Image 1: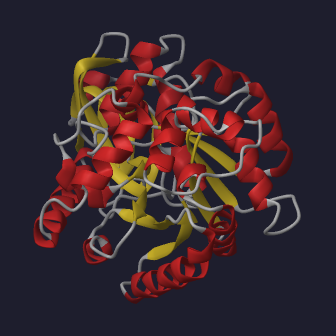
Image 2: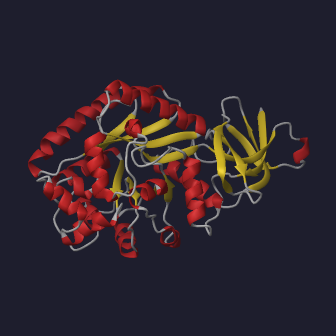
Image 3: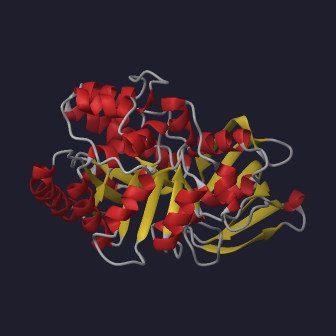
Length: 395
C-alpha cells in the first residue's frame, strides 16, 4: 500500500480542507483511506502544497486546440462566431489532430481524470479511445434552417455510430438557441435525452438573450447579415425557450442528466423555471472563457444561494489561453473570495463526476474509488491557490 501526505488535503466532498492530510492507496490507485496525519514529520512522502482528487473538466472542445492564440479577445459572441467561421479549418486535419492529442496528454498530466467534451467531427475519437482519461463526447449539431433538420440528424447519427466503433461514450446534443432551428433543437435534444445525457450552451451572453427577447442586437444582426434564420422572438430569456423545446420531446419531469453550460446571464426566474422541470440538472461554469469573449462571469452568489450543482470546465483554446483547471479555480477564487476553495474543488471534481455518472469511480478521496491523485504546488499559507499554483498528477 502507498501513502502520500501534504499540508492540505481537499477531499472533493467537503468545503474545508484537512490540514496535514494523507491519502492511502493501492498500486492501481484505489483509495484505501484518507485523514489527518498524527505526526506530519514522520511521513515518508509529505509535500508542500495540496492534494486533490483528479479533476473533471465538464466542458471542453478538444478538437479546437489548434486555435490557441488565434482569436481576438473581447469581441462578444457575434465577433467570436465570425472568428470561428473564419479560422476553424485554417490548418490541415493532421495538424488539428496533433494539437488535440498534445492537449489531451497535457490535461491528463495536469490531473484531469474525466471530461465532457464537445465534438463536431471524428478527429478526436481515436485519441480518446486510447487515453486513460475518461471522456463522454457530446456530438454537437448546428443548422438554422428548418428544412435541413432531417439531413443534420441523419449525419450526426452516423457520427455517433463511428464513435461507438471506437468504444467511446458519445451521443448527439444541441448547441445553442441561436445556431439551430426550433425543429433541430428539439430533434437533437431528443437524441441526447434518449442517451441519458445532454449538454447545452445556455445564457452565455446578453446578446443571446437580446436575440430571444426582442429579435435585436449584435447576434441577431450577425445571423440576418448572413441570410440565416433566427429563432422565434419569445419575449423571454433563452433558457425558457430551451426548456419549452424539451417539452416537445416528452412530458416532464426530465430525469436525464442535463448540463447547462456557461450561465453568465442566469436569473432567479430562469433557475425557478428550469428547476420545475429538470430533476437532474448541473450548471457548468467556464470563467476564463467568459472573460475572454465578453469580460463577464456567471452569477456565482445567486447560483450558490439556490444550491445549484455547479461544475467547472475550461471551454476551448479558441476562447481560452490554456486548458488548466487550476487556472479556472483560481479565477473563481479571486472573483468570489467568499467561496471556500474546497467548495470550488467539489465543483471541479465530484460534481462533474456525478453529471457523468462516474461518482462511484471518480471525484473524491472515498474508499474504493480511483479518482486519481493531484498535487497542487505553490499553495498560500491559508491553503488557497496563488497565481503560481500548478497541478501535477501523482497517480
